[in-house]
Image (cartoon, rainbow, N blue to C red):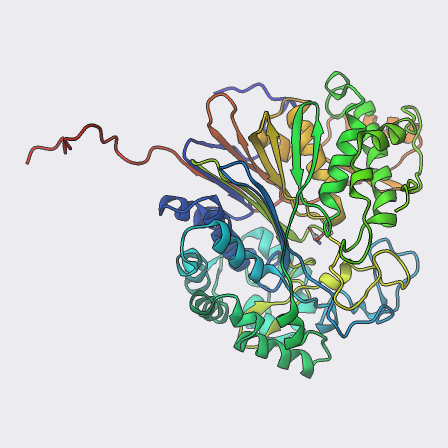
Length: 561
Ligand code: GLU
């Protein structure tokens, strides 16, 4: 089959097409876990939750039950829901608990204390988020949804070059924590590519969760093990932190773009707000006529991103503590004001707007769509690769390092405060057309996430790409003063030279953000198209076919008896 490709070149992976259900994630076994739930009568929420539990086993550098995340859900009856299971600052934390490294754009502090080890750990929301999503919107029992994850943890799974690469990258830090080293550095060396990694302690932990639910962590024996380990090693998370953790079901952030409706995650993520803001700005330009990856398009997206980052630093933080001017930031009027500041010929640096009164890529994403019309887009994280690198002994459970996402300098919008919700960039998004779901999409990538999701949306809407092309297409990133361009752009030397001429400082990078995946729902046929990109171990898994057609009163087996 030859398809006309908007990028003019074949994709690296291929999309999956199915009629009855589709799951995409950054590991084939995790997508399969979700698909298993659909085939066992579960819905897209059961599938997504089984997928994230499985990811916490097979993509251990990206996600854990002791992490943080968001779900954006469009239910078959049209309701739109977001679940905020993001992490919070422990109650014993103080705004001057770290010594910031001056000039760091990535919240670096002396001794890497907000990055590796016990002081980097924040109070997690993942497990409660996953079990709550299941209770409220799924239909299968937790024990069933956990089955694939337990199986993978107990029986083991193959170490991919991608996982091996992350273990090597983090080898020295993992070695500092014996319970992490035991799993990922068997015999003292990084688990080799192709070897089978088993996680028996984590399997046992998941089995206990299957019977006891999230309270096994939030006020039970697992929480006690965490609190003991924290106290022994100078960490801050206590049983009280766990018991007081609160999950939020929030109104999604919504916007429109050329007649499509955008539904995404609001604060405590900055992602949805800035996706809508940037789309509003770009709507005033004819991107389709400008063309994918042309100098004008690259310049415009870069300028738009810098505007978003200027506003992010000024306005975005925990919405319970800080008045985030969401309506203003996502308004068409404010976008028009900002659009007028862009000069097509010349790169600029931008300050935050004045509101009216008032990596790395170390995360994971999955999408699930069922035949009933439920759509889930979920991004979940440990923040850094393997989070804090700490595994609580005898639990197999890796702990996040979400404290790294807080501004280590006191007195700022996103400075540390006890119990404050941590500011994220994760952007699980759903795009609707005439009220019907069209696209579920998301990616890892730290602060590069919302710009990457923005580019995928523009790729589909303006450049007519398939979902596979849209998630794989080369990306750019610019928060000022450097414009990052991925290796993959066509005619890269010419493009880079033209960008320099317009005043950008260009850096060529291997990757912007991480393994994106998404599902596109064909508006005419209802077919589900799943895509997962080359930047991670992603795969789409779907199924068609299904039950035999049984008509009338008389059942005919069709087989001679
Ligand atoms: N560090 C995470 C990633 O690499 C993102 C965390 C967040 O923004 O919430 O994708």
